[in-house]
Length: 79
Image (cartoon, rainbow, N blue to C red; front, side, top):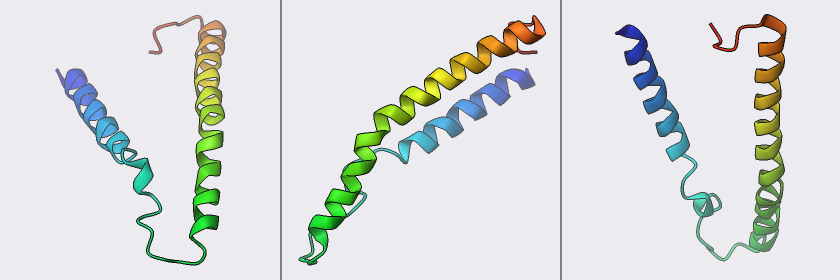
């Protein structure tokens, strides 16, 4: 039973952390007439540009790590 409870807590925690990523457009706030606003928007857009590559790299790394770990240990269940 504790194993199920641990999974539930981990799932709820991950969901709460990912919910913090919602509203990405709110990162830089409203336009308050700042003269540097255009540069701030430009800088913020670079994060959007690289986000796809970062996520793709993380996915490839996770899959590769799982395969290498499974091949090295012979244990595919991770226990």
